Length: 247
Ligand code: BJW
Ligand code: ZN
Image (cartoon, rainbow, N blue to C red; front, side):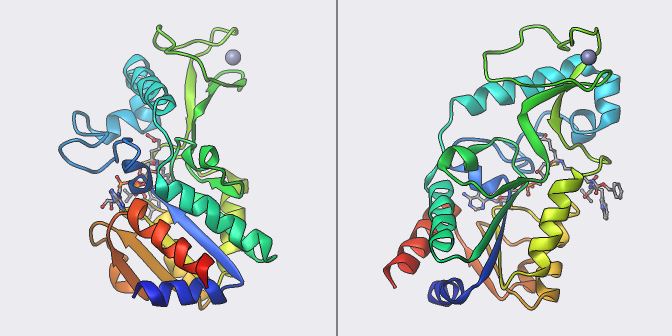
């Protein structure tokens, strides 16, 4: 089956990749839905990743996100991220289209060298004031004071997309445009339960794309893809890209 995926990638003229937390797991970034160790193990997601949760307890929510931001500074991209950056270069050198849609907020794809990255769920690294809208990239140590405040006195929040919020319009438009025109779609390390990204596979199928999933477990889309590879992205992606480049 790996050979079939490599053959589909070799023939592809336009590729769309969707990534989720599983791609960063081998870097040591916890996923969301891993019940014991996941990011939500000690909390109800509704408490942390919703506008209502932030309104109820902004100190708790901003501390949680700030801790994650600081942890992300200490981790490195893994071989899965590296392979995706190489895959992008493979298509760029051949004048073919490639877009990486990520639900991840850690920016590890960019650090690995990927350039065509669409951040569907925003990023942990940019914080904005909920009153004046002022945004600033935060690369230093922990804020230390929670919730952090803007010069105008307003509360600052992480630039991520919470449940019930709209995805950034430009990101969504880019995703829809790329999906409508792709001939191969890869869903990597995502549980495929959070909309609208969970339905991207159907948009790719509607465009007659070959569809591939790589995950250590089955997901709700496993039965709808042409090729479902069971395994770690940090192990399978380098093998796939090596084989593609060796053809
Ligand atoms: C490995 C691995 C290894 C591990 N190798 N694999 C239609 C129907 C029903 C509900 C809705 C709907 N449309 C919208 C909604 C509401 C909601 C939604 O989807 N709810 C569902 C839960 C049902 N969606 C929204 O609210 C979105 N907004 C929106 O659509 O606005 C319009 C609208 C609103 C309301 C109603 C209708 C329309 C916004 C979604 C924002 C999601 N935000 C979060 C938090 C971001 C901030 C933060 O980081 O805290 O994004 S939630 C969280 O889930 C995070 C992730 O990006 C996202 C996806 O998770 P992901 O990446 O898949 O991670 P996991 O942990 O779930 O899975 C990891 C996977 O990796 C697993 O499968 C492992 O097996 C695998 N794995 N190691 C390969 N080494
Ligand atoms: Zn402000």
